[in-house]
Image (tube, rainbow, N blue to C red; front, side):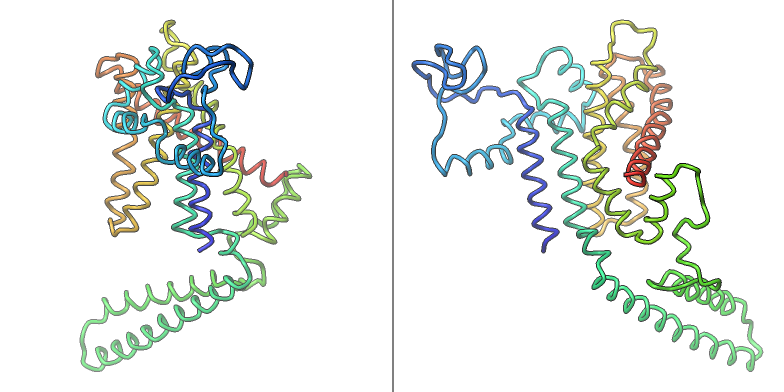
Length: 359
């Protein structure tokens, strides 16, 4: 329940945050008279031409609800023009926004902020709060779950061993049964090793922790020790950092895109930043869609296939349209961009780990 509430709060926060950086377009209602209440400039229209504030301001409790609803549902109406193009014609969207069509589409930064909030809200709604998952009560439930799984596997193993005994007595082949027995024993052993609170044969902690590893960097070594003692908390901090610092993906990725166009002077860092921000927004929307598809029953194989095909295809279409490239030029840049994207993602995760462990 708390995960659902947090998810709803994240979506509303994302919409309002995106709204705060999104320029207004065609929202005026009526013409104001007199002076702007914000800067004192004489009004000549529905908005102040000096600071942009609307001539008419609401002063009621209902206006607060209206602002929330407007930020969440309206998004100026531009979201319904932007999303279809982001999915089907990302290159045209990028090129047209760079060329100056700002009022028609949601800005890349506003869309990026909204998709970040929406993605983490979806994760929270579907997977629950990590703070609850790693709580002592939850860990107790996990112990019971693991114990039941081990018991079931042990029962199946006993049945297989009895079947093998009958096959031996009847002189039948036992190769297939032997293979099933080995697989089941491996499963039982793995369950026992990963059971919460379990110890290895040497009495050490779970094999997921990092032991006897020193870097010589005091802060980092101290952080590793804390993560070993409480891996659940370390995971929670990593997720929180990814949520707060997701914007770092933009400056990390932009220089890599610029490397693809070093000899094309007419494209600047601004153009590449717009490209990267729209691309990241799409990738997050894709993650959301695949998570929801998994919930409704789409097979893991189809999801994996989508992960392999959709990002390169989208990158290719966006490169080709945004930079007016020929097919071959867009194709080799797509291959290079995939490598650069993984490099930027690895750098982002590394920075998050260093920040989380040394904080």
